[in-house]
Amino acid sequence: MKSDLNKMKTSIAHLPISNQEDLKVIVATILEQVLNVEMIILFGSYARGSQVALDRRMEYGISTSYRSDYDILVVASRIKNEPAFAKKLNGVSTIFRRKTHSDIRLEIVYKTVDKVVDFLEKGDFFYAEIRNEGIMLYDTGSFILPTPRQPELFEVEKQARNFFQDFFHKGERFLKTAKEFDYPDEEYKMASFHLHQACESFFYAISLTFGLYKPKEHDLRMLMDFNRRYSEEIMHVFPRETEENEHLFELLRASYIQSRYNNGFVVNKEDVETLIQWMERFRDLTGELCMDKLSELERLAAEQQASYKRLS
Image 1 (cartoon, one colour):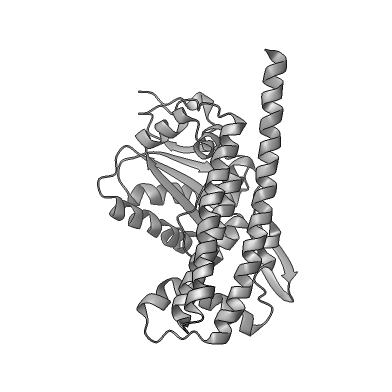
Image 2 (cartoon, one colour; image 1 turned 90 degrees about the horizontal axis):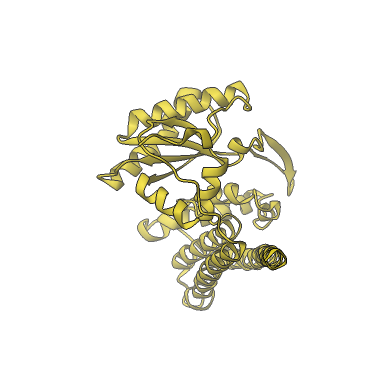
């Protein structure tokens, strides 16, 4: 089957030359690392031309910086060994940085052709957006990506609300476990792990509510960078203006692995007390941001339904 290229953009001429060169290296590296690649698609801010090249500012007395990630969808005809496939793709970022010395982060999503086609035919919001706004960087021309079914806004709102309720509830349960069980029992390392899981769940609640997408990521710093596109307030939840606070954030970040597998990992009572306060603040912000977004989707869905009635 011939790929339907005339319905997807293929030019990256709107991007600076340095980004164009980066993307050429990314494509070549992906093709070197994994087999059965049929398409490589750029999506997100670089595809839309709304990327942030570099944003430096002072936050809580320290200098911070942010730049947009390269968001890439790799579509394969088949994936025989998914763990090996994923490991190879994970290594692309390291090779890319080594080749280019770029400090732009690379976020790669992968799926088989059958999966992507199925998502598009069902009107999945995330993949429909990639199909409509993405840029085809590489295509063997062997498969067709169909025009996505246009999802009704009430479907988008319902899906976003379900995701929010699921992950926000998980975050609340992890926070409750740390606060009401681990902390009173002086299980401070386990408290740090459950607080990490709460934080991760709240990040997922935000990304799924706003974009119907969950990054395959456990690193809290990377999840923070990903989600700040939805609200800069996220950066203010975890005060890191002092070495002590930066240490606490790194402790929370490391606890995903260290609290379970490193007997020498030390978490004390005061650490947990502060982290619980941070997480309660993040819980409240997550609820506020997501409920505002859901209200907006609900309003737009009602307007869409009303317009249908006027036309019928």
